[in-house]
Image (cartoon, rainbow, N blue to C red; front, side, top):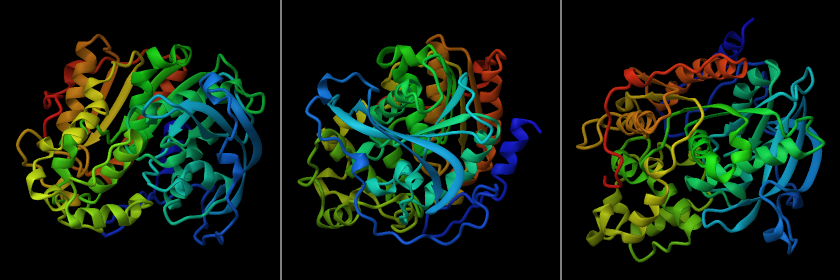
Length: 447
């Protein structure tokens, strides 16, 4: 059986619901079969996720400060997969030294030290307890259901013999959609994983990056930052596959404003940006906006998606700030997380993007925006891919799924992306798809 067929089996049953909760991926692999009952929560806080040493600034990025071996858990249930968790030094959005945690999952047939996949999770939560590392260690939360579902996506990678590195891309404060640190976290986790004697990996291990939706944020930012931030990692990257990609956040907020399903993500983004960059938005928020932001402080995506149908930016802000461009600190900050302003990756890229967002309640006729998948904008993603081509990276494959929206778009993206990434590991030249990418939007920071 080829890896592509294995992966197709792994995502069989991917489900799509236009209800008030986030659509979760229904895993069909043996790893998650029958796991439908959550184990009881309420365990004492795990000190592994913190570090009290005063030497953090002097440590090198990716340096391990704690390590442990355990069994991977799915929905609180132990699985026959060995894992190593590492607490390591990295940086936050303001380049301050912090610690983060990654989990290294070992394939059942044993570790092949020549190759590994860094899988970026789409856990999309403002609650640190919902992180992949906590779910893998056995913590069960409502927001952590996404991690349980993602086990069905990771399983085919393990079955194909890849070691899988799963970092908490949002860091230990759950800074949702923060941009650059979502890329630094996985890059330093690769350093940690390939330096630790517990993982079986080596400093020479070849790495592929993989992520969809929130995981695509981490994947593309890692690919963009790697040449300068982590050249030692960049030299070992065989490629990066991302789907459902956030490019220009301020335009995305305009796109989802008033959406039946995705409008609540705007408030999540405000919270994530405020946390990451120490911005106080309180003087701009309306009373309604303050109420929404207060109730979302620890919200996971599955408690936001579809819960605020029709909510608009204007409702969240005071009347004089109805135009996002009038909120100066917001405009300045989202400019820092616009991928169009980031460096161009030097590794081959596979980019997938759905474009039928009307299926998830987001109109596709707004000026300067056009069609998207309900939350991400196809024109922005095409423009980014074309910019990469124009700047010299011609190893770009772009796939647009015109009949699908964001959630079912994952089912189209995942098997093809995994097959493409596997080809990079076995040495096949990356195809040049630049000539087939249709024109997109501008990549400036205006809505």
